[in-house]
Image (cartoon, rainbow, N blue to C red; front, top):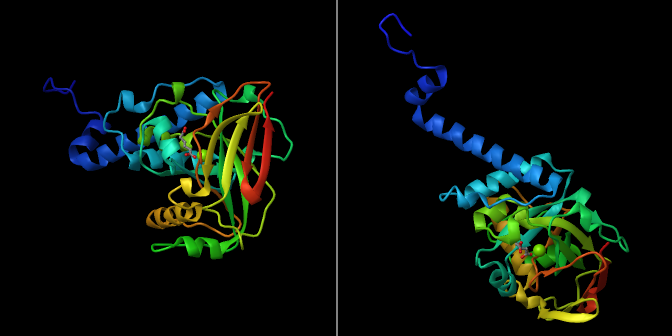
Length: 281
Ligand code: 0L1
Ligand code: MG
């Protein structure tokens, strides 16, 4: 208490009064740190969370991407990028209609013929995708699907293993962006030169334990998978980043994702790009 009987403001209160904008910025930064740390702990403990938006009704995409950047900074290494919610099937599955992007941690790549240890994950789902390997950097705005094809040294079949850190994959667009768009593990098939393959027309079948669960064509993602990568190039450019030579890009789930459990085998057949088989243990 002061000699006048009034409590002196503590330094944080003083700062808040002096510069409310700076105080709001500091509070937002703290919330971003807290969300990143909650997601990291959930993944480590294999325990799902309630989505942040349940208690933060104003959680927006910009904040979601800020959380994701925090996770990227702490990740094992940047192998590339992944698009999400680029197909109607995926959008319908989670009730959202905004394409989004995440990053691929190089330590989460599966080797060919490696089985997937589901004990390391919370609630895995698998989905077939078309993957691009960039031979040149790509920077927008104005990058087109043709630019993407010209910059790609190879394409491949891909299987993405999602693992939402939110109970039952319940989230808003901002929540799922914060959670690196449910990234779990990923498998890339043999690399194939892109010339001469009409990626929009390739047929896709997706099976679990030999039973067909979904079909699609490459056009399912934003009309053409290269168009999806072009969208990503523009978004990254707007964020001051860029797609770089040597990075891979998963262009988005072509079908709804399928849950699986130990003992299951999922198979993605993607036209000339080939067939990927993943066994879960
Ligand atoms: O490829 C994708 O569309 C991933 C979407 C991620 C959201 C989800 O289904 O968890
Ligand atoms: Mg995906």
